[in-house]
Length: 113
Length: 117
Image 1 (tube, rainbow over the protein chains, first blue to last red):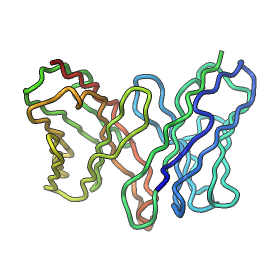
Image 2: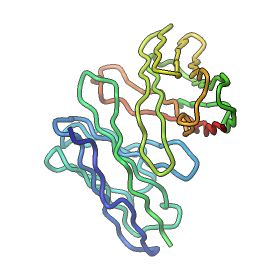
Image 3: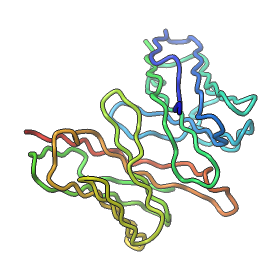
């Protein structure tokens, strides 16, 4: 079956622009996670959804970062007024209840100039 | 705060040799995950270790978990070039009352493995 998909795969933004990154989880997966991976580093947790409810947003680095999952499936991560330090790969992962494995999408590489 | 440390961070080895990657973590957790990442690609799940003493093997890779020592190892046997990748370990934070499948992962820095012919 289809895995986690993300779009766009690459995004170049000028500093100060707003961007929106999309994640399509595996069908039926209740849990959805966003992670940020800086170059040469491991992924770092940003936020977590259970269905449409955002239960943990402790990893969002600033109030410029906003995530939503209004119908409990597709999720969007929005970054307002992008800064150079926002340049990273943004990974989405999904999982289903009762399992321990998170399945990751291919990521969106964001470059802020 | 949960911290996860891997070593080595870089490893260059010859085909046919054996080696071990170590993953230490700072607080109690019963779940440890190993992922593989190829350049420009996403993370592929390799192993999920759920209890003390757990050992799992897939091909030339074997992972083990010692929760008392807060240590996991990923052992590579008779390495081949196809195993060249970056390997991450991750530990979850599953708080009391939280539903399994809801835990967030804390990753190590990754071990970049290069296997030379």
